[in-house]
Length: 385
Image (cartoon, rainbow, N blue to C red; front, side, top):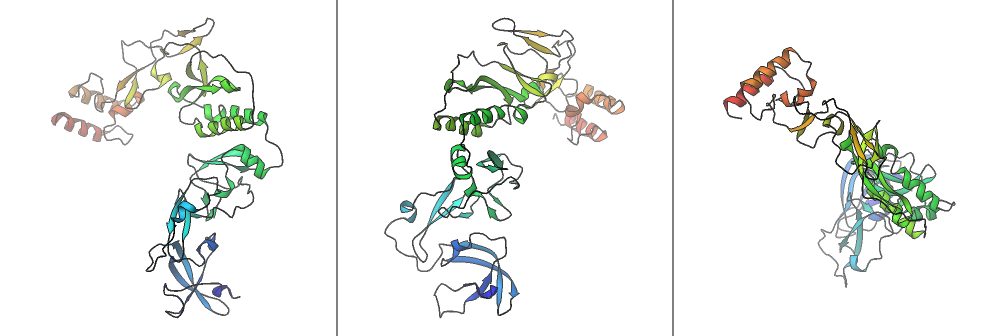
């Protein structure tokens, strides 16, 4: 069969109404079978010349329920359809054009095949994008692993069938080696170390509970607040129960503090608030860390855990910095914007060795302190900011 005569579309009235139009798909289209004998809306592009005939290239094709003569079904197709066998979230749309159809779409509104499940695909060489959305568990370089990304479709290929909700499902479908309780423990520990516990400031870290109440992991972990893989850890906890794994349970103290040491989050079993200054700890959103004369905060503290409750031992240098609300233009931190701030700003321009004041003196937000900031500051004073 000539490539240009493999597929064609015809108007809704059926044969005899108008001549059918030959169409041809490029390699970017998958699951073409889902559109066969269905009511569709097609955008066509250039005409392609084949050996025996011509066809128009399909640029976009979608199922449609905007037909003239919808079918009267006995029941809503989505209510009577078999459950979708994919391991990713889907939604169902009932369509009554040409029949009673239950069509399933993923979270990106891509039409998916819920019942023709392919064999496992190793996605180790597939880039799903630099996004934090958790996609599920898939075979990665021969091992079942957690995968995150921007979506399940890459370069027109739908990988949603290759993802699973648990390691148990992935192992049973993709690997001959049994998934053991030791593997769950190893994966659990990996999700609490490495990139998941990297930090720059104390505020990057948070102490979290382990799952030793069911025998998995320890009492507490110190992890990066933003990178903590909550969904992946929950999947391992579910696998732990599914495999009927067990272990000694623990009697834990209360949740401790956490600190950033040498780029890694560590637990600190001192239960009072860490008194260290903000150059080490960081500041909340909307605050800036400033070394305020007369306000003595230590620049470094460590937790002495030699007794039950622990004690903070701090330096006495008073150079730790204090978090103050950011009021752009209030360069001397007296809670007012006036001529004194203009004088300081000009001094900073002439003597630019004042990097700690950059953010609050950078009125126009261009990461530079210059005469434009002076003009804006004067205007703020004249208009009572």
